[in-house]
Length: 403
Image (tube, rainbow, N blue to C red; front, side, top):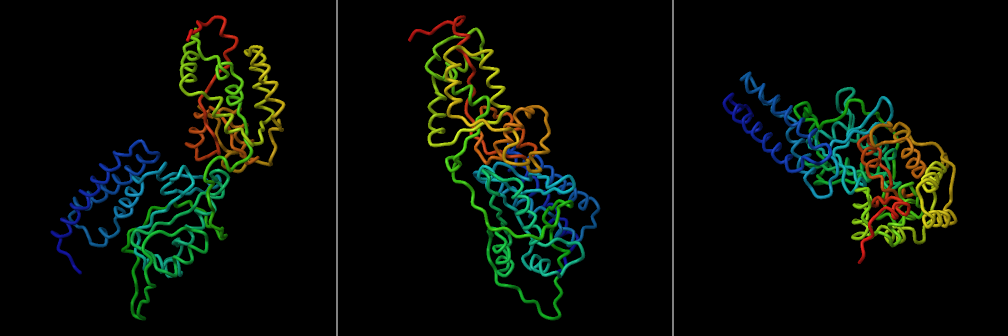
């Protein structure tokens, strides 16, 4: 169907207006990891449409190629409950990377949003496309392979492909066999006549990173851990061991210390005791730590710890397995290449990587490291508790609060 230039200009105006409406929606989630990146993509699309508008020579094919439909689907998914990141980049190796559309369920689910016409998807997957074009099957294999590298709670994230415009039955079945969860309307297979030639070039293409590596392996659908308790081995960070033996967490939080940070921790401890939390977590678990963690903890206790704290450290050592730093084999690629900078300190990297190789839940107060690693695309299985310092040696100069 042909359109007059006036009709095309009206359509352009509507699309530009819709683009600004999407930006307004993103402002509601601007704190979400990747929200600003999504906003930039929409602004780029608006600028493209404005250039068409200014030229006054728009063609219907150019409007059909707009990515706004795909971007609007991303916005809709990003504003759902439980989403933790959007448009997150993960490195497969030094040369190849993959853009994950939506990450939700605390990192346990990866979702790709597809807005293309189902006929186009099926044609591309059956080889009826230009050379070098990547099918939805290729992209599914990329997601599954990358998920194996970036495990969450020692399981690859579930991979979900959500088809906004639907997907034909046979292609949906191929994805399910690979281990992809398919969401969207399942449609009967389209059977074109002999003379029909479907032109997919008019379709808007879903954003895709050009450096994605093609994979040729399959993977069974993964299931995520329901909660931390399914991991029976706990890797104790220096901060966890300090919190466990501190006088503050063992009945002596009624002090005003000369150090403001200790007084603040004491107030938190009175409201939210840490020791009972750790004891419940430790119950029935195997406790381990790496040699680096124990040596640094021991130095701190010998330097700052009081008699009671040193005694608790000795008791902790009796129930703790201290293993070499390199136990469990080599680090996988993402963790090996985690850059030491800012909150990512070398000691923390050694301790958390040790826990990952052992497939343990790392118990730590170092939330800054976990967040900084996540910014580099590296996730760790971790239980984060509030920080507590050793305080027995500071009590003599503190003011006791008489209850």
